[in-house]
Amino acid sequence: MVKLVDVVAHLNEFLAVEKVRDYCPNGLQVESTAEVKKIITGVSANLDLIDAAVSSGADTILVHHGFFWKGEEPTITGVKGGRIRSLIKNNLNLLAYHLPLDIHPVVGNNALLAKKLEVAVDGSFGRAGNIDLGVFGNLSTELSAVGLQEKIESILGRRPEVVGCSDKLISSVGICTGAAQDFIEEAALAGVDAFISGEISERTHHMAKELGVSYFAAGHHATEKFGIQALGKYLAETFKVNVDFVDIENSA
Image (cartoon, rainbow, N blue to C red):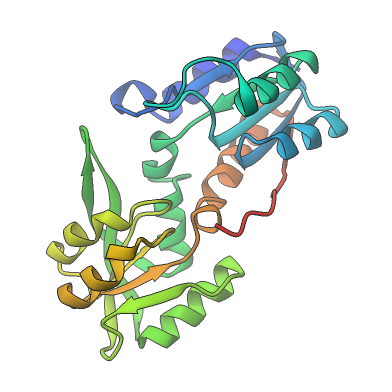
């Protein structure tokens, strides 16, 4: 058993929260109990994940996507109200780390996806506020667009959509997980042959083609599972608490 304040303080320092300007609060978002015995981790704080945490007897939920996003309705009503009521009713804390988890060099979404794809990271791109979100580097082996598509599928368990230039071998890759498709120009300026992110927009098809880049839309949820799993494992090892990852299915 550990104190919630100690877990929050440690994570805030480990993920360098104060150095990142984000569009949601990072750290403790909903406080219900002062002690942490069991943690459930997941990509997003939805009702299914909350129900799973309740069923497991957890007291704390740790996610990548939490609540209170910039520009959203600030009142605790509707779906958000229902989720927060369930957290408080069941004495569940909610911790969320967004951009600090995306960019962390050890447990970050981008760094871990690069490692799994055997990309040697050489630099960063995708400026957001005071930080670069994405990473780029060279694959260990050149691949065709189909070859990289198959490699991504083998790692993520879903086949990515590919648009743009697909008739040349790919040696350099940019990675920015989630909804980072609009960083495709910055990825191209970094000199990559391919850019991997989570989502695709109508405009992405034409941008990729005109920039001469292969764009891989690999899934927002799918590309952001590794970071929260790694952070949960880190917490389990650091504080000797029970941590389980729950993957709530999401096709996006």
